[in-house]
Amino acid sequence: MQSYSTILTATEHAVLTVTLDRPESYNALNEAMKKELNDVFKQAEKDEAVRCIVLRGAGDKAFCSGQDLKEHGGSPRSLKESLEKSYNPLIRKMRTIEKPVVGMINGVAAGAGLSIALACDMRIMAETAKLIEVFIRIGLVPDSGSHWFLPRLVGMAKAFEYAATGCDIDAAEAERVGLVNRVVPALELEKTVMEIARKLAQAPTRSIGLIKRTLNKSLASDLDALLDYEAVIQNIASETEDHQEGVRAFLEKRKAVFKGK
Picture 1 (tube, rainbow, N blue to C red):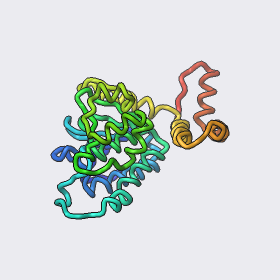
Picture 2: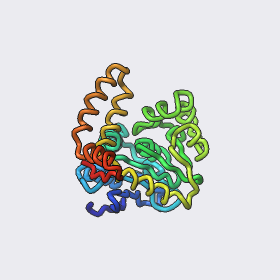
Picture 3: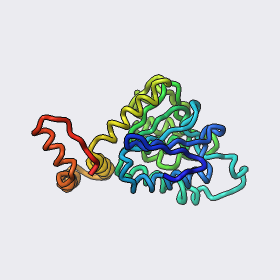
Picture 4: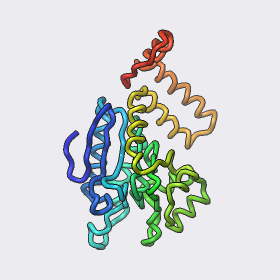
């Protein structure tokens, strides 16, 4: 991984940790960070040494507070262009990269920062953190995929409530309604997330990618179409080296050693 100016990267045990590193602005997204996030996910997709990605914020106050409103000084600009150029490609890449992405929600995730968190495959949240669809507070609407993620996670009524009121969602509610997978004490967050990430990194990476691909497909498919699609995907999985290793390990009564191939 190359070095970046607004994010930090580190790879250990096949887990790439990407840290949004602007703690002085609650890890708000400026133009440089958006460009670097798009680049790091493109690089991670091609890097066979990376089998799981953890996304987190620097410090203990914020995961990401959303768009940096100070960067352009309030001058008029095309938000449509900003979304099409930076945010939308990032969300698409996070959802289609065939490697697991785990969000470590260490502090507030607001606006586009929340949308990015929702694009992760799993979210583990500190009990002191909170989520906010903050757009309505400045007369905007959620973007970067929040309109797509929210109703699928919490239902239409709750999605409307969160988007239209911009209320703070504390960790207990986030876990109760299904916005996050797990809530843990802040001091245990990193340990918990890395345990999950390392387990995912040791799993059959191709199979996880195919699961992700099929779950995405299921959101716009009827049962008959998905059954047909599953058959195709299962055939692809059956031809991987990891499947062969899994069968051998089962027959030899040992733990499988998957290589992500």
